Length: 105
Length: 118
Image (cartoon, rainbow over all chains, first blue to last red; front, side, top):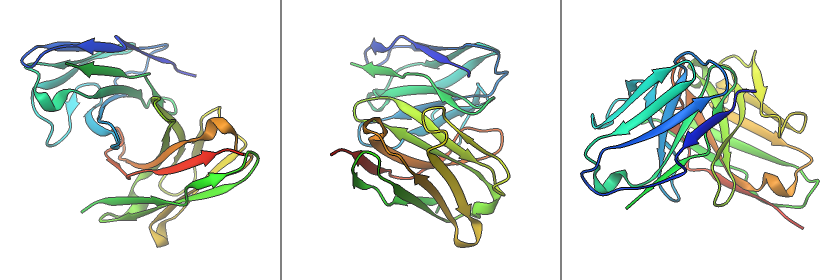
């Protein structure tokens, strides 16, 4: 099974900051990686597919990069609405989520 | 408008069974693969099961393999998750999610809570 490891687990930042979340796969997954945002009590929201393809309606301050086993989600110029938990998910072989990164103020 | 609405959650004793349903509207269910994902209280997301458009392919997480069965009825625009031999650690909010080809899960239901407890 493919394991996904996210870091950091928690991240403290301020409005206007640039932050980066890393996701590592235990084996190559090509570019079959998605990023989600989840707020308390809500369903996850898909931000990025195929490692770097921004979903429709997602602000351009979100970007994704990487391939094979190393991936990053970058949020530049943090907005108040961005404070949430972020998950990576591989969908190359079955589906596996990372453990999540909580972004707080 | 795309909508996914889960139902069937509730309180069940360990060893019991429950069948979750997911009603899809606003799109043609038969054109999409689907996932079930769960989230235990205060914990992260855990993928549970996948079913392809025509039900030919199904996949399960190791934690539910042999106990859970995913199915769909495209004519009724519905997805199902039959859960047997339930354990305390199956307690979670269960989401159904649409999985377009080559992309992550783009639409999710609101979730239904399953509580396994004596």
